[in-house]
Length: 386
Ligand SMILES: Cc1ncc(COP(=O)(O)O)c(C=O)c1O
Image 1 (spheres, rainbow, N blue to C red):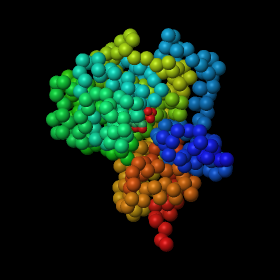
Image 2: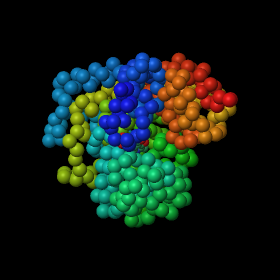
Image 3: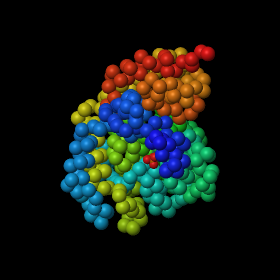
Image 4: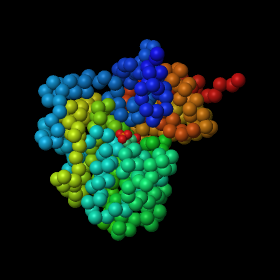
């Protein structure tokens, strides 16, 4: 039996059948069980910031595991404290960090934090994705994900993403928080109009509500900045992180800024694994390597190259995004076929909708790998004539 057949017999069918069984990775390349090589333009859904098997990540994880692997939160360890300090330096404001293991957990902690304001009403965006646990799901707009699990916690109002007027109308003095992605990743990389985050900050401040920026997908260099929201100059009350932070090792972080830093107190929240020394060492290695290898600049340069490559085909009607988080709109609903043809030609691609592709390759992807996709692109996007 193949790995995929054994998967079908052993794993719950929550994801549908896996496209491939992958057995090895190096840099931006992965290999399947038959030894076929692929260039990874998906990056484990915007996770493999350093690509696969980066020596700095391997070294940090193995050294830390040999030194001290796990201690629980009855104790601390140097990597945990150092990681929290490093994350605070990225937001450049006074705050405190809660460490967890995934994006949905980072958001779950944030949601509990908002409850400590004494208010319960939340405002989220249409098209949002914040995770699959019950609290994060309550803030996720897609009906197909939500409806089978209702009633969900909280009183959540959804407003159109980027619509400052609708947001102003939805927020009042009973609103605990507004949660917003700087760019919506799962929606296919949707960029809000200029000034939207600034408007969200002004509206929440006016009503004493918290502004919560979900940077789970956009953070840690993905858009060519450490955090996607900082360019707006806005200082939120909560920032959530995961995905790229651990470079493939599960790490989530909830950063509370200003007064929000101290809303969660002893006994209010917890986790066995969160802040684990190995996961924290991994995250520190990711942050160090992004800095040492100039990966913020690389994300911008490769993102521009990838945008040029992808828009070279007439089937692509537009590309949106920043850095190496890009969404391409197709003229027709051919995205699934494009992904399949990409795979046949040795490229792992992703579609977020019938006519929408998303690109989130490792920040380390080479100019040559992007050029290779560019060279094959016309064949990949063009429907074969029969
Ligand atoms: C913006 C955002 N928030 C939260 C999540 C959930 O993260 P996780 O899948 O690690 O729970 C995701 C995942 O795609 C995301 O894109």
